[in-house]
Length: 236
Ligand SMILES: Nc1ncnc2c1ncn2[C@@H]1O[C@@H]2COP(=O)(O)O[C@H]2[C@H]1O
Image (tube, rainbow, N blue to C red; front, side):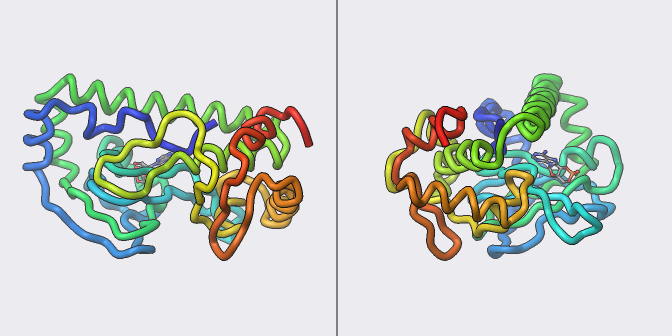
């Protein structure tokens, strides 16, 4: 299962020439941490390419009482393509995890560009199919894995995110001991589709087994190897 986007983020898959032409369609904007870049239900159709920083993509559930985090998107990734392509209201809210720099392009300009550049349209289709695959995997994980397994898998995944640097891809392979995931318990719960209480219980178990250490809005991974085993359901 995965919250992270395609390892080959949109902008990284463009040729130098395509990249230059796409970027020239819009203008660079900066957003502070916590800013809402896009809001679920809004009627706007611009797209954004993240140049620096990470965002969460989430939807309101339970009549707005809780949120479910659908994805984390980082440098090089394209956002807002769904409303730009189908003219429906925004499917989700995109919130800045830290300061963000993004290239903002009008929906019209983006659609015209795709019509003239079939290879780039192919990249957008590839991104959408990748996301559908991940959504299918998430559904199957929700149906078949325990909260502990889902949390262990999520922490393994998130600990591979390198929040610094422009266009930084997730680090492949297993995280190093001491890597820190900067999310609060309720945010973690929102990424695994479980209650805060269930996640707190699973974290307690991980703490007693010295797999993680927790603090204010952070989980430090002490034993990535055991975390990976727990994610596969080897031990409880
Ligand atoms: N499951 C998901 N994973 C990652 N990003 C998503 C997901 N669902 C929606 N998004 C992004 O969030 C954006 C919200 O606005 P749009 O619907 O225009 O386009 C959406 C996508 O770019």
